[in-house]
Image (tube, rainbow, N blue to C red; front, top):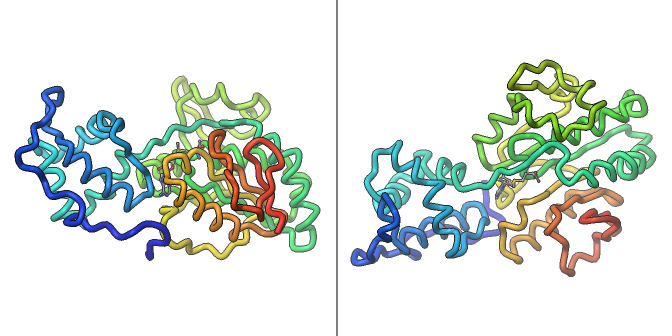
Length: 298
Ligand SMILES: C[S@@+](CC[C@H](N)C(=O)[O-])C[C@H]1O[C@@H](n2cnc3c(N)ncnc32)[C@H](O)[C@@H]1O
């Protein structure tokens, strides 16, 4: 797929390894500044995620398992592998290891209250002739966000009778998508589910796990999608959730993505961003209507 936002990655233009660079003695596997610079630039070009210098230890701890699995003795060899062999799947494993996937059911619950009380009634009134509801959870991680959206929609199921409802859930991390499709979660996740939803939409639970009911699962399509690539969907969407991912991107990438989300929303549609992702200006087509909740007005 064609990249929309970032420049193409050219490893030779970035890191010429400084063979004399001293590895930090704190690391079991030698990990030089150059190794870190190479990986950070590769990740930025492929995903938009910015890894500043203070993330070096984090990058080390997330990748050290890859080195062990591959039987490599230092990060220089890992960088060489990424250079020489990037197309054979290691870059995708690197990206899966680097992404931060923290999420939970009904995270930032005020968005789900807003969806239920304000956005869904507005969509039901505005789309009443075609009876079509489209929601996109962009950067869905392990699925708790799209399942929370689907449960919120199902609370309105009587009013939505006869409606064509689809929820698209996308992420670039293939590991989290596999977990999301399984729809099986640790029993501890139940603490974030409001009691009636828990009763209605959890099929089975054991001492350790819960399973999301098929009535919820069938509303959602999980797809691999890098937000930096071109988007195959035609839209328009009535509601887009893009929460807690733009914080990892540069201001420029964030702004470009917001414009692209806006172009995917129908007039009057809603965009939910994460708690620290407020828009700073230049998006007059989106009006702030609630906490990190925007409505497309032009
Ligand atoms: C912290 S999670 C947020 C999950 C959920 N939206 C929430 O707020 O709970 C961030 C997710 O963004 C995904 N991500 C990072 N860069 C991405 C990109 N360029 N395209 C698509 N997804 C990306 C990661 O894989 C990760 O699952």
